[in-house]
Image (cartoon, rainbow, N blue to C red; front, side, top):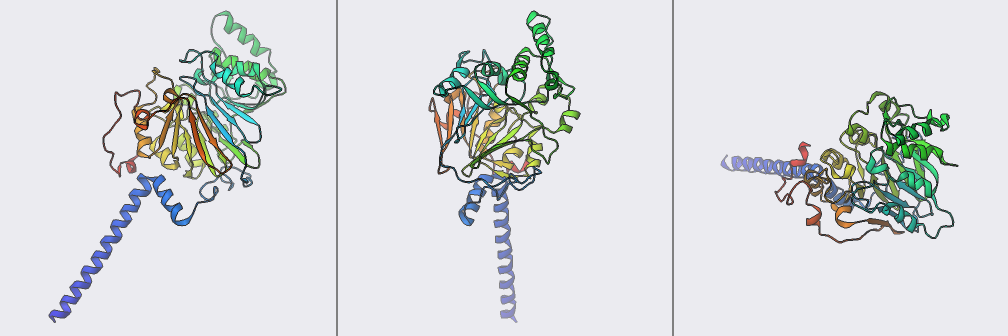
Length: 414
């Protein structure tokens, strides 16, 4: 009897031990999956092999698009993304491997850089061209630090396609310049003006200058940064080897959302996914906590990417933990100005990038940053000034980087 009891006790203890081990392993996997998604993906890929670019996203499956997009083939040339240092602002210039190009936003005057720097940078890159041409030009939203130089770019370059918000320009100043702009808007092709259906309008002269230049550009097609619904994406720029697909505000979003705050004006920024040779770059404009959840919903909840152009210059209300959990990236690029008045990038945002083990580059620290994706799919970053990650993790709103240990489970609560 004593032996039987001892055997039963040993069996019971073994079962309890096995259950305890299973629970510990399950908890560890949960913590790893939610708190460190990039590490989880790396482990899964090392075990099961590299995922094909379409295996964990909707980008070619038809979800988020009524038409299934064809798979991309591997390219042999280089694709370059220039994050141009324009001080406090955004300016992104993409050189596609087939010779086409795209400009997204173009900074502002008085932002800590020379007034002619953005335009001169573009002119130097295109110095050997017989004709100065930009195939695609996009304004993400109407803020001055994104739009200010675009009218000059349109004046110097022949632009084939312009993508812009569904927002009219209505300069409201009392001076001669504002009145002149109002007259120029009245003189535009009113069929083009009628494309802009949102009841809100932008009253700044900087947006009006761009609006007039865009609608006057000859042999140029105007596209609205607007999707019919959440199942449709209207802006897809592609060749057989690359694709950039933009998730824009929907017709319903424009109809039902008043653009009466800075946050709401920022949130009309499209979020683009650039793909080339099994790499993905996320382009965000000034996206924030308003439109980031919409984007996450539209991509089906998660997407494995490589490089994030940080939304809204690293503000506290952009690049939320929910967004970073869904869009996992290894690198973050922040476009911001030295000593800017907005405390960008904030320590709160930088701490989130640190939590997700992201390597951070900043135009205020590194100058112009050029990302190259080569024919093998390898990533490289070239920059004007080298800095340490310790330096880049110091927020503008704090004297020193946050060195406090962040618990592994902390990310579960965001």
